[in-house]
Image (cartoon, rainbow, N blue to C red; front, side, top):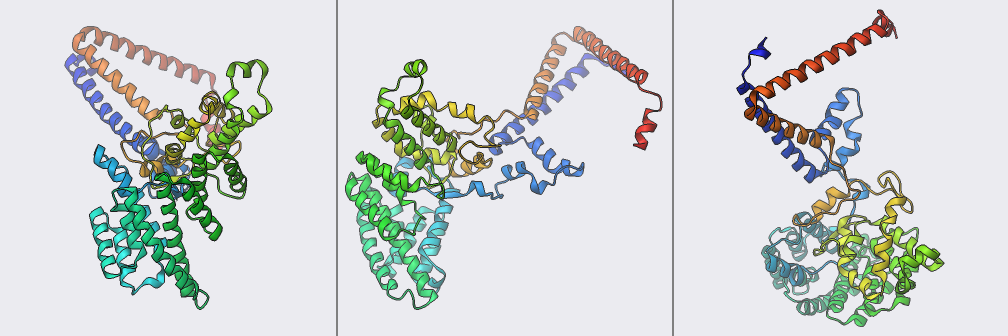
Length: 498
């Protein structure tokens, strides 16, 4: 009776209010999905309502691990970027020119933690210069860090970590950074020789010696990178080889990746191949540089003569098959890189830390190695025609892999923390929109449409609404009658006993 007596104005208010509420839910769901990669309603349902209804424990839910920034999973371990740029001479120039922050606070905070770990030790307590540097690395403001490092140098002119900070952040050109790093290298070399003579006397001396070695290796590697940027590539290669020869046990800085890039610049492909044989080992952790450089070396042998039409007619030769398999292997390890190499996606400055198999690693690799792929005639053409075949071989990358483990599921959250907000994050595998976003979007659209129809054609809309309501009610009544007619009358009694 009440349904018959309501006026069209009631329908307009009801549908307008419902469309407003559903629009607010849709916008919130879309924002939450873009930020965390998961629907908010789905997250709440699976992790909080499901346990109450007898579902899984929220502490063991994989989706909760993905959506929470505080969760740390083994697959999302971040690594130092071996080819990271200089803050003062390179990142700062970009920021000055564009007004955009090239580094995130999370990335810079990781660098501060690395510097405190590598350049100080537990036995430095009581040493004024090292304690001051520990505070300086943690400063959020750049000018405060530089000022603290200058104060330390005035107090202790032979403090190598203070020189490192000034070379990284205060020098406006690579040439200035090189000069300061050479001074720091002399100081670090003297300190390392002094501590080496007493390293076996006590545990404290051994720890201080390892600290001095870390400082020396870091300075020499960054000095070699300065030489590489200044065009003194052969001198840089010589210095990198010396580091690998003198300190073979230190793998913290992945110096072999710097060496591979410098050798590619010299087009010393035989030396590159020798390094790949040494480091592309099943027992060693893989990287995009190792996998994609292996693919480049194999593509170099066939890329200049490769033709897709000829390959379709006669099939792939053995060297072409090896090159294609190497490309598939590389794409499986990091599927983000081909779009950067093929310039289908714009590059940004690489972060100071990378996530292996993530978008951050793809940016870091393509930023420095795109020129090497372009230098090999036909290599990008071969990549263009073959890289998408990888996804046909691995239709469910989060469940299983072909040549590597299944693709980790937590890369998106970590990459969002490492990369600046203005970057359009590459996501793999592409996720379909959650059901709740589609549902709220459809409900919002239908509500708005009903409100407009009720406003423009109140009588017709009311008439057809009643028809639909009566039709649905009649259909449900018929289904229920058929259901009770088929089932025995005491079915619920038998079910209660079961």
